Image (cartoon, rainbow, N blue to C red; front, side, top):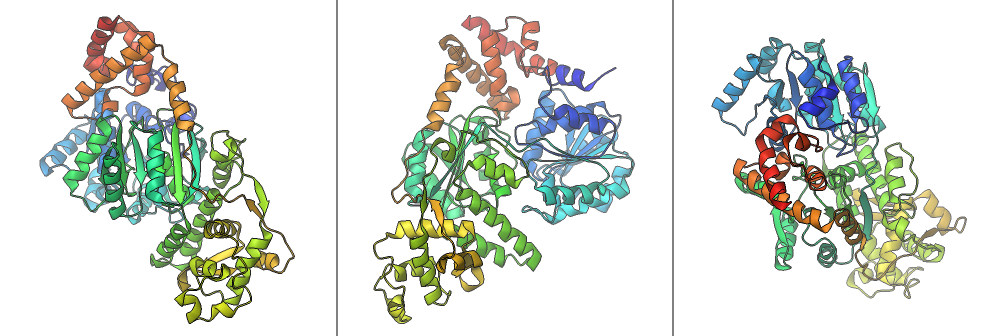
Length: 601
């Protein structure tokens, strides 16, 4: 009898499941509904692709992006799996032909967007197919409690009513407890299992730096990852183009990507990123969800993301191959104000705004953490962890200082000026600046004027960031970012409590050399002879990928090529023992790689 393990080996070319995969597959095959929360790179797709090949009728995969669908379909077809895909990026004739193959029972999987699936016509047609399973990919989009809620995903709650016999399997890499419960209730009324495999990505290093000069900080960081593939996230379309041009002028292969570009240009940019080594994309958050490039070596944020969930998802695009990857975040108080303004202006009701503000506060606490960043991040998702030794706080523990006096100067100024002004004006008054705005409001006559004259502005900016993160100060967006004093801040102001914080750097930080060390270690794992072969194998992969007009990883992953370089198979049987080489992929690509290995030996 065909089993999940036999499918894994004969179709996908792997000897064993990754941790967590088999438990999810067993749940689906039982059959039971399931929500699986697994970190990026854990192999979520196999958890439903394997059962889909064992079920008698079709599996419908609901996916949010055309690019995501196309990449998965290309990968499945490369493994010899008959799969169909219907979306707006294809002609009507192609979509009709794809549906006919599904109706004829030829395709085991059908990929659809939620909008197309939930039309009355498609739902009626789907009844005749009696699908065995509906898969909801990127399931966090279902939840109204989540930061990435999409109204069209909410309609998927109807599936359990229309198809009571079908298994519903939902997958996401990021969802806190409230979001998980909401997804499970919406999709199968809680009558299924929630499997949380874990959120830890130990191969990702974590670093946060205060903003001093974004362009200069980005340039310094990029020198530590020169020649590597990565993503730089920027908040605006204008910044993506400016930063990309700046990187190109510095000798990097960089392209901008944002929703305002021509669709064909966006497609071409994505294809270059997938196929070429050492390509850097400078993008808004419009880029990423459909990207399954395993060897992204870094993700750099030039601004504060919207939440810790969003940040986790975005940095999760790095290091999917399991090799070391670098993540870094640069942020300032202007980011905090901008993000809070976005939340207040999005038109949502009060409860939603409160949730989003709390999410932003959690991210701010992560940014200003003095302890292991991985512990802070995982604690947010309900997990405990030991110090990781792979974040900036673990590698260089910050010194803690008593900043009660300086904070009291700031709090006094906030109080004296009526808690109606933002950080720039508060710092100006506290430092005794003689500005038109200070004179306009008569703040040169307040008790706190000039009390912090001996303290530099960068220090006070860092102090305010930490006081915001610790809840001693609040930021009132409805009053244009005015700083206000909380109850705990009042206790410091009145001398009933002290305030300790991280030592505040007032000079521009130097980029970490962690990436260079990790890169050297990864390269040294292979001998010089094997490294030379690996380069030839990658060149062959690039040639094949260009000929079939698909991303390079569709042919073979880096992990497969590394295993190939180590093993040096010299016949078909030996090649089939290489991790990631299945029967169909060997038939399509194996002989070409065997030829490279034979010529190199």
